[in-house]
Image (tube, rainbow, N blue to C red; front, side, top):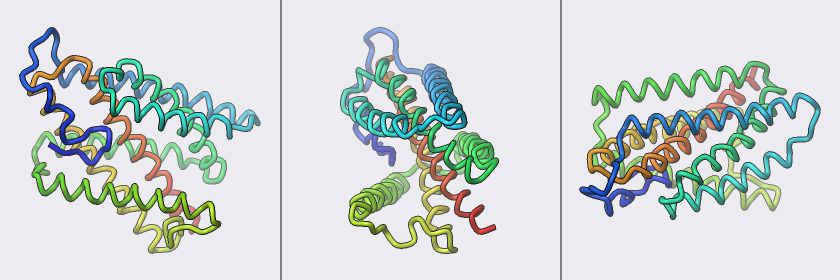
Length: 244
């Protein structure tokens, strides 16, 4: 198995085939934990949102959320047993970042966050239905292609961050012209398709009777993709709205 989501790697479940010690991972259990993480993200995001519109400088929240969330995500990725603790902590930290970014966009484009949230969940449930109906077949080539595209996007963002220290950026990445919009649309599609891989990955983990704590790990991986998808939809909408 391979997921484009870096937190759900190809060999995540390989050490747990046929696990029989105590309770095992289930799809329903993963869904329940995903809702818990989503609630934590929303609560944290709402706090930062109201801080911003109350006149508070949320720069510190953005930095704490971004840097802290990144560090905790690395711990969760490489130490899966920690996810019953690190996954909720990640959700709270990521909520600080998401809430701050959302508020900044909302201040510039009124109504953009509501539309972005609606589209994110519409994509989530649409792809879940498509996955359950097996309209998209998760083949090895599909996994490899999506993994390559996801890695390419992450590498582009990393290069852009490095270039930003020298006052330049990757051409068209932040542009609101037709090419810039097409680039954002492409990234949104790749982020959305990662949800299909996450669904498949979690389903196979449950089929292999993995240990119970991997429900948190699966929920964490799904949350990583959802946050990424939301932020990319937000970016795409801002480009479109800036042209009006």
